[in-house]
Figure 1 (tube, helix red, strand yellow):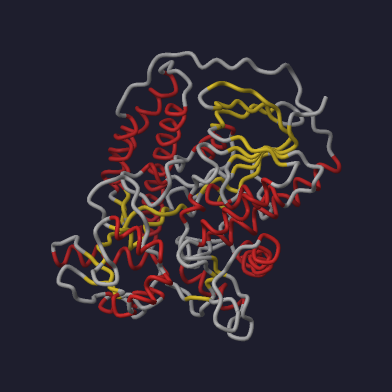
Figure 2 (cartoon, one colour):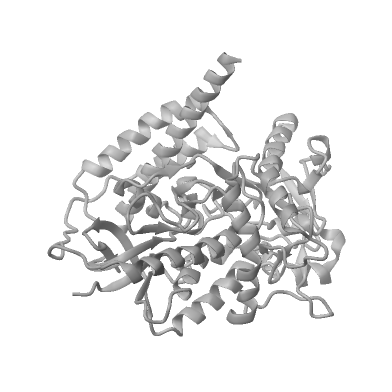
Length: 497
């Protein structure tokens, strides 16, 4: 008996969609979206995708060097060289085969911009909504393929290894469903909702990472969280929209509460230093001035340029009462990205048989300690494609058939204790925001472990809310444990010196 699907892909962002499109037409693929098909972090990506496509003015070695500098030289060099060397072909394929409309200059050459940490203009973009453009075009292409099936409002609850594949337990519109697959690719995005304020979408609760962890997969460097220096400092709302790195790439100045530039006092690269550097400098300047009021000033570029280059940011700020052609943009650091995750090899293979991961939930090592701007979409494309190589190779040589009866899935249980998610967010914000607070991390870890134990053993009903709460608590405990282990390691090294 054949499994229900050859490949189950959890996540409908760039990594999930590109992986689906790279399978042969006879491979039966199911793509799960936790909410709507377009609700993902990929859709929110503004700046663009970094790739060396202008070989006259750029060089692969420069892209590698820039990424190493941003990542504190802790990057996995093999993965990084694969990313930089193979990435341009994937990016150009988006335009040639998928119809992605990258901005072009008057001579119809692809227009490239500069972002923090890059030594060359190598960011391909579609105005300031590149992620949306890529996601929509990939989704349209995938929906036209008869071998690709989509299921939205589908929460992957559990994977049960069963010989030649997995039994997958789902909640589809909160109703239980069990199906079988030969391989699973987790493309479930980041962990932003573990913080009170994040640029991430509502789906970013670390579900894929938690599921892999519970299956015994190796999780690596989950404490390497990136805080973007310029999220819009909204007065309300948990989700903070991003003021793209590209705004500073086009010359925007970062100002303190006195409306004075200050970055040059901390780093010679000024506003175009890597994200982690700019975020720490903002926090230092906040301590010096006693104020958390910071602004971006792009007004000097003029109304026509701003509206054409950053139409989405212009409209979004206008909704908040800020006209960026005339007003300063209030900004402050905010949780943005995850460099760690489910540890994978260069083909997206995890330490659990038949389980793969790609995109933000995975740890390829390409980013090191801090992701270079616009390398995230590139990583999603390159390593999602490479997962399909390994799965396709295995499909030619292996029998794939789950063993045993189809599991019975019960969702019965008591109502979940309220307040767990809020408590986890408060713990994380206090323990690890831009710079870690190790005392708060120790105290927070004890609290988070108690919350996680309650969620696991409390007999709660299986709902999407319960899954997300358990994921957030799991992610929180892993991050805080890693932080404290890093502190102990540094203390030992200092002692030896």
